Image: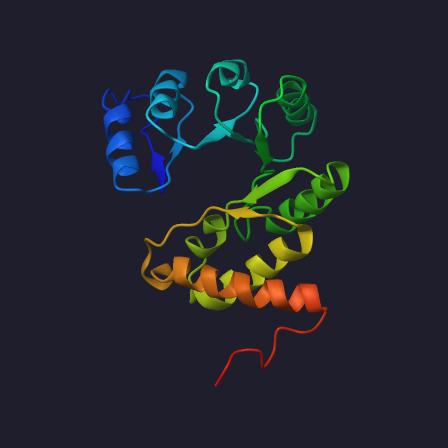
Length: 199
């Protein structure tokens, strides 16, 4: 569960909320740029921080928790590379997320950036926020999720972030679970993802 916070409003009880979820044996990430909130969430058991860029990367040194590193501005390269280097030099575990932009808002260019960062950092863990497409495209989500998971499989992107709020994407988590199995088999066997489901 990715636990989101409200920008500009400090959540005083964030640590308690994380602890309750952890007590239910749920895995939790914290989604905030407020270093105070993040520190308390990490102390309470959050396993991942979304997100880190040049504005808060120095604070990540004290969290002892893996982070997702993102650009300050999608498509801006210099500070993004600097943030990746900063984390690498300090042995902070991270996943690279160049940011997937919505259709009509730079989607194709953002896909190219994922491919480029995979070439630049062939061994790095990566993440893609696929909810930026499924939630913001007025179409049934199953085919979109399958396509995006296939792209992730080909690029070696091991983590995705999705939501299932809007009507047409209410089954996205289940769709992604099925798609990851299908696409793993198709890519590893180098065959089209067709007629592979049991009858």
